[in-house]
Every structure is written in C-alpha cells, then in structure tokens.
Amino acid sequence: MTATGALWRNWARTESARPIRVERPSSPGAVARAVRAAAGSGLPIKAAGSGHSFTGIAVAPGVLLELDDLTGLVSVDRDRRLATILAGTRLSDVSRLLAPHGLALENLGDIDRQTISGAISTGTHGTGIGFAGLAARVRAVTLVTGDGSLRRFSADESPELLPAVSLGLGALGVLVDVTIECVDAFVVSAVEAPEPLDATIAAAEQRARSADHFEFYWFPHTRVALTKTNTRLPAGGARAPLPRVRRLIDDDLIANGVYRAVCATGTVLPVVVPTLNRAATKLTGSRRFADHSHRVFTTSRTVRFAEMEYAVPVDALPSVLEDLAALIAVRRWRISFPLEIRFAAADDLWLSTASGRESAYIAVHRYHRERHEPYFRAAEEIFRNVGGRPHWGKIHYLGVEELRTLYPRFDDFLALRDELDPRRAFANPYLDRVLGP
Image (tube, rainbow, N blue to C red):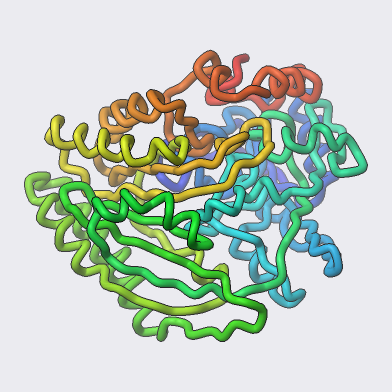
C-alpha cells in the first residue's frame, strides 16, 4: 500500500520529516519491491519502526516504510527456544505471542512500544550485569539490501557478519524478520524502595553483581535513590502481582498523571522544582510483587521527554554521578526528570555500546517542553571523559571521527555498509553524521 507523504514525528517530538511518499508493505517481498522502486526513483528509503528513538536515526526524507502490516510470529522452534518474528512486531506483542509456547524474551528495557527491528537496530537493553542487550540474542536476520535483494545472515549463512547486522542502525538494509533466542517463560520477584543516595551509589556495582537485575533512579536536588531489584524465580515460581487498583494508582495516576502536572509546573516555575522532586521521592513508596517477566520489566510512560544515555565503564559510575551532581549545582539548573542508572553484560556486537566491556548506563532526561541541549551537551562532556559510548537511539552530538575511536570494528562496519548499500539507499542526515556519507 502506498500513500502520499504526510508529517511524521517521533514519540518525543525531537525529530520530524515530511517524506515524499509512505509505503506500508505487508510481506518481505513487498519490502524488496519498495526498495527497488525507491532506488529506481533515486530516493532514499527508511523503515521508521514505532518512532521511539530520540535521534534522527529513522527520519525518512524520501520514502518512509511503515511496518505495521509486517507483524507476527513466523515460526517457533520450542526445543531450541528460537522464535522468528516479522520486523514490525512490537515488543509488547512479541511477549504476548511467545507466551502460549512457554517462552519469553530473556530481558527487556523499561518500555515495550518499540518494534523488534527498531529495538535491536539501535541497541535497546534492559538492566542486569549478567545479561546483554536484546540484539545479542539475535541468531538470524533477513535483510533487504541496497539493490532490493533479500539476504539471510545466520549461523549457516555469513555467520561472521551477524554481529554487525544484528545491530545495524538501519544503515545496512531493511530488516524483514528476526530470529531471536528466547528462554523458558519465568516469573520475576520485584522489590522497589527509596534508599539513601550516597550508600546506593557506593554499593551499586556490588548490588548489580549480586542481583539478577538492579537499577536506580535519582531525582536531582534530592539525596534519595529509588531502587529496583528484580530476582528471576525458579521454574514454577508463584505470581503475586500488584492489585489492579494499586497498579492504576502507582503507574497511571502518580507516575504519569501527577508527574505530568509536576513537570508542567516546573516548566513555568523552575524555582519550585527541588521541592517538587523531593515530594516525588516521597510519593514513590516501597512495594513488592511477583509477576510474569514482561510485566515487571516494563512500565507505561506517557509523559513525553527528551533523553540522552551513555554507556560507561562500571568502575567509572560513582565519579560520573558525582560530576553530574556538581554540574547541575554549579549551573543552577532545575532538573525535574530523574537520572536512570542500569547495567549490562559485555557482548561482541560491532557497534554495541557494551561491545567488549561490561557497562553502566546513565540516562539523563528533560521534559519535552524544556530546552534540553545545554544540559545534554555538558553531560556528554562528562561521559566522554571516561570513554562513554552514546546510545544510538538517544540524543547525542558525536560525529563519525569521534565515534570511530570508541569502536574497534567501526571501520569494518563501514566497509560492510559499502558492500550492502554502496549507493546509500538507506542514508539520512543522522547516518551521514555518525557514519559518514
């Protein structure tokens, strides 16, 4: 299906485009035909996923591919715990589709609105120092390359290139399906509690290593950390989900409704932000529950914001947080959104932010009606001082030469791009900046 171009915007409203035309393919063959047609017209073509990247990685100035009709489960190999999924399937639907087969994704980030292809292409991850990001579980992909050819990458077909195409930034082609290694479905026991910030930071690495999944949030202008510790229960673990009313109050009313009002108030009256942040930490009380993994890992986020996230060496985490706190104090900024701190295992993907090293992730945010650039640029300098790597789908200001120094296989990736997309069918301004034209 083809439509004339209309205004496209990402979820955060940080990027927009008015493509020349929009196509909605419903099969891998239709994607291949769309790529060939775009090439014949001399137009670049991009698949946009669900628009949950904060950067311009999915901006389509030429032909926009919307993959909402390319969804569903292709096949399941229960014995090998492999599931092949069409590229436009959202992570929330992946969890639902896997459940009848007794399977689940090994880990998830804190939202599940992304498509499976967008999530792996940008390096989406959850938390857990023993668990790598989602793309590290990819065992095969089918890709439409720059000339409209369908090409398979797997353990049997070009296996040496799978670590590149599994996290390919949308620069190597259009993913049409993904085969991902799953795990047996499991229940997670969650403990959430406010704790003293200094003690939490000092013990963060040890807690990350002793728990399956550990993360915490810090509201600037407070000395409180909001901690989350998740434990994977043995097979057959009992569920003890939050009562529906408690979930509605905590996640819908307070976390989204009340917090939206708090952010809006802080935009108009910045002087009250410290007081509002302290109130927010008090409103977020302790709770314990156990539920299916995807219901614990993910939450609903309806308050719009801009985000920057960097992966830093784990041992650099305390000093980086200290420098960020000092930066906010010295600049006298009023920051209403919390910092989020998570962890991930090392992997071998060419452009993964955790490539070759365990990583601590630090995310900084600003409410979407506030100017984020001064805060983000200053924070980025702190991250860069410790060799931090920016999340590909979140705001950063680095270019190709700076990024080349952060990834040992960077030039190998560029060479593969030359092979699979020599005419730059999948280019856009963001990819030109981070990979070169």
